[in-house]
Amino acid sequence: MGSITLEHVNKTFGGHQVIPDVSLDIEDGEFVVFVGPSGCGKSTLLRLIAGLEDTTSGKIKLDSVDVTDKGPAHRGLAMVFQSYALYPHMTVRQNIAFPLKMANIDKAVADQKVADAARVLNLTDYLDRKPRALSGGQRQRVAIGRAIVRQPKAFLFDEPLSNLDAALRVNMRIEITELHQQLKTTMVYVTHDQVEAMTMADRIVVLNAGRVEQFGSPLELYKKPANRFVAGFIGSPKMNFFEGAAAGKYQADSVGVRPEHIRISREAGDMAGRVGVAEHLGSDTFLHVHVDGAGLQTVRTEGENDFQSGDQVWLTPDPARIYRFDRAGLAL
Amino acid sequence: MARAVSLQRKLTFTALAWLVAFLLFFPILWTILTSFKTEAEAIASPPVIIPNWTLENYFEVQDRADYFRHFANSVWISVGSTLIALLFAIPASWAMAFTPTPKTKDVLMWMLSTKMMPAVGVLVPMYLIFRDLGLLDTVWGLTVVLTLINLPIVIWMLYTYFKEIPVDILEAARMDGAILWKELVYILVPMAVPGIASTLLLNVILAWNEAFWTINLTASKAAPLTTFISSFSSPEGLFWAKLSAASTLAIAPILVLGWLSQKQLVRGLTFGAVK
Image (cartoon, rainbow over all chains, first blue to last red; front, side, top):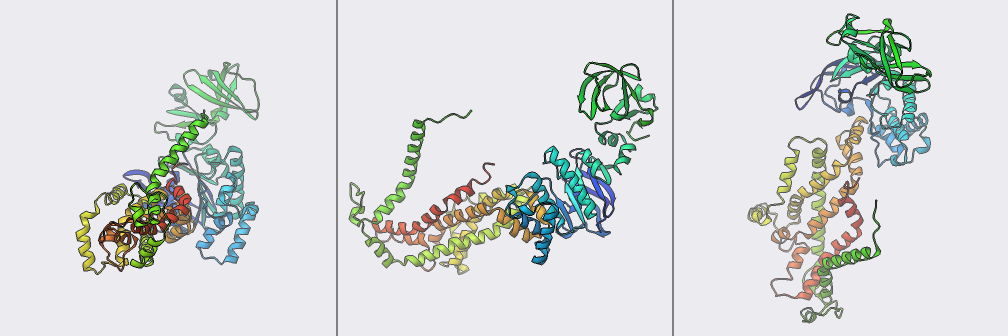
């Protein structure tokens, strides 16, 4: 079991409110991702759940038990840090066995569990090495091994992939997702990368300045963003926004349309523009178009095309995929 | 672009380094040489550089004062005070390095400021306190004094080393179920071993060489080697050869310790200076 409940959690650092009032229900076995820009409070929220920071007010419950006043050692949670935080003076085996040693688990049982975890994470051949003799990916696997070995109520991941190169990040992303499917244990994962959030999460919490902007499944966030912030944050490339007369046409203060929902043509359309930069990725082409009166807009087209910088083009947003927002930025 | 250092430049700097090292070492060398001279050779003018190599001074020094008892006292007070200081300093430095408060820097500065006060300023009250508590001329009394006077340096050194340890690692230990003392014993101390070792060595050396309190608060029973040396200097006039033999005997152990641990000391003292 590993449900996590936050009730009106509030965190203040020296008079500065970082987390104003957050309430969340994370169900047992769920993979929840906290996503948001730098400084939005996502790591602080994770550290509050971990017990590494004290809450200023509010309650944190694990499996309906109030753990707000319990230290991290007594919450039964495991955490994987951005820096891996391996113990440099211990071997891989000792690193993975450390939580078992702290729990006074019988050595024979501990050895077996370490061997099992090492097998799952392909670390068997490295058990007697020190962390400094491992690559970034291997170190991250050791950190995960240390987390899974004592079967915690939930795993907390604090931007665990941000120190890895792009290719390894994709591999580790898949490995962590598969691990979740295997273990079916609650996972709370912090990232600033919305692609990670979209690909890994059962549900995503979008945070902005400590506030929960929206909590829902990836596609729910993509299709029905609650406000302009979520609409702009979820989706890659970012959603295009129009204001003023272009938005007034749709009875809104601003409207948004995703790059993949704009049709581009050389002959006719709703808005005239000129291609600034054309990014040809092979599978997709991203065209950054300077639209008269609406600034730079991004268009995504599938596959290859022959649009080049300087081409005169016409853009037509898909009317069924236009997002309307009021003055406060809330979805209409 | 790195500039190639010419051979001449290298030789000049090497010669200069040797010269400075020799100047620093000369008083110790002269003391050792004098300890093997007769009293006449010791005061001869012009000075006798190569002695007749007599061990007479050493025998006489041992006959007149029990070197080994003083040596044992020095070991007791320097090692004892260092271990007790570490016992207090490790948790204190941990607290200041990892859970600092707005006043932490002030506390550190205050601790350091106690080292700026001349010791003689508190000699009388300290002497009276020691007399009333029956601590005069006891190794326990000296151990307490040396612990207290060196504690600020030990805390400062450990604080500097601990600051180099990423807090993530300690937090990871907490998440892994380590309570405070386990975090200190299994993670912090093993990771700070180079720093703790150099602090230990330096503090042993400082305590070993401390003369003001050891001479003023002891007479015979608890007298360490510093008192042993001073006993050869005043009452009977200056017997340079015997005094040198006593000094050589007193500094020899710490010189050997420093020599054996120089690698550790340098590593510890420069810990964190270069990433």
